[in-house]
Length: 184
View 1 (tube, one colour):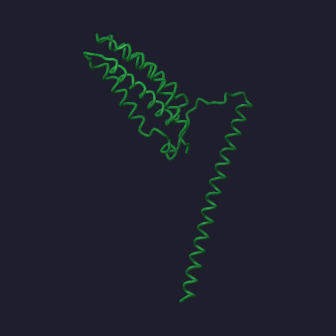
View 2: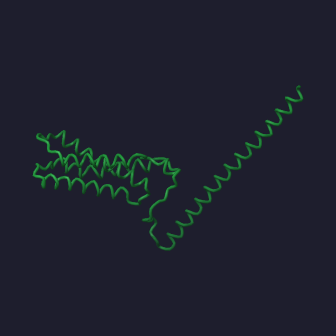
View 3: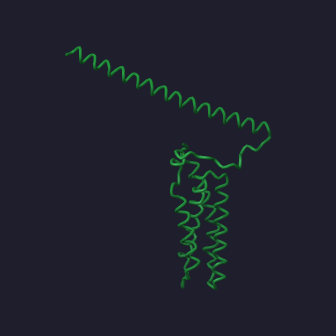
């Protein structure tokens, strides 16, 4: 009986050792692949610098579906479109008494738009996501003021002004969050 137990245990030990070696080899392979990829990136950067080409490219960064899952802002596109919807509602629905609080709350939507738009565009790999989101939010604030004027409503200058400043601030916050997140 003891001999059978020893044989079974020895067989399990051999299997565990083989599995351990297989995992070590897989890890070694992943590390080697990562080193090779970094070496290629350094070599490409040297070639770009050596050829006088700009260090940054305007090309889109392509993420694999697995990498995209790990990036921050998974639902940022939906939130961005929701904030645009609420911003448009502010221009469409007239308010009888506009207070400073209401104007600042409305300007907060521009901050959220800049934040979510930057995350959304960065997840898609666009090179100038922050600038695009900031310009888009500022343009949205100006268009909101024009829409209110065209409709004959009283233009909420406080909301449009603070919103035009809040959109780039939100875009900056979105870029900070995206850059601080661990990379896949």
